Length: 299
Image (cartoon, rainbow, N blue to C red; front, side, top):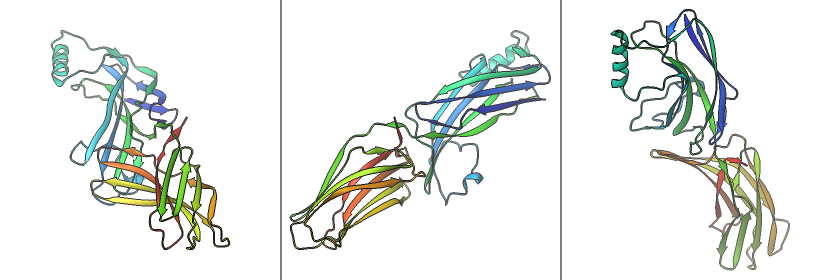
């Protein structure tokens, strides 16, 4: 009997961060093992139908095809020789063993532990479960046993969550005008992370006699793929001007960024973008101010 265990310190890591854990191998008898390895792989996929509940989705990724794109597939050897570069090398090594020319390294019965640290690439897409697409990552631990041995060590896999890349934002300004009336909007930082607030400053100059009843700011998340576009309103904030007759309004708004907001990304098949729309509440004002916001991790 032989089995392998995979323990992770955390099942989530930011792009460009580290993933640490331990692989434990238990053998009740001697077994030829070329190496103990970790495989990190991830994919982006378009969904053909409505997505099933997350717990019901398959653990193994689909084969790359027209609707699926492999993002990463790397192997790390914890002990033993490096993986073969081709099937021909593996077959040659197997025949060398069968003909007695090259013995395979053998692990004695017992328990073995291999700590590991994997440095995640900084350009990974964040994990995402959407209406039209999904981005998922897995890590697998396995013992490389020659194929002709009947006794194998089962492969164990864990799904991991890749968080958005670390962002560095900057100031953003925009305007919208209707004749002599002007709406000016600015934000000090156009990069935010979930479960925070977006600070917005506004100025409205309205010298005309037409009245503005208020101002509304709406944060929208847009999922775009080759098949569909799905929009979701994350939050909205309203300022009421109905009790004032002033021609000039200014102030600050704090727009919530919900905890379940997806991180912004541009993938092969799909993308997630966020737009902050600021619009005066007046029938005659038809053009809103739109600001592109990046949601991810902050330093």
